[in-house]
Amino acid sequence: MIFRIVDNASGAIVVSLDQPDPTTAAHYLKPGESLFAGGDQLMIDDARLHVVDAVIVRRPNCPPELDGLAGEGDELTLVLFTDNEGD
Image (cartoon, rainbow, N blue to C red; front, side):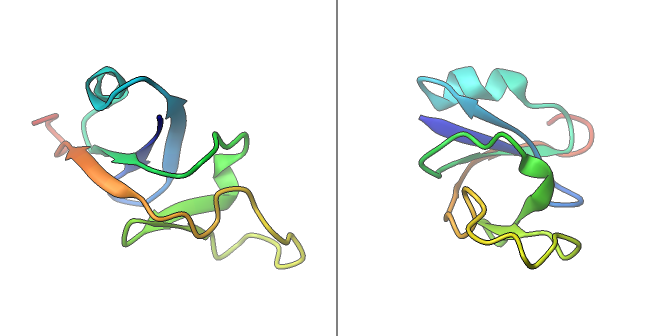
């Protein structure tokens, strides 16, 4: 199953993970991050995308000539989130 760890403040995708279940994927969470499930592939370059309202979208500074970024438009499901203290 594919999971995304996302920075709560910026929406930046910190890492994409292929893990068997959410409990295992949650071990990678740090304070201020959320765990989302979704998407059908791992992304090699998460830097051109971020998460807005549980959807993977292109960052505003991403060159428009780049068509069809892997993962763009994928809808995600929030599994777990932490605040800045890790709770």
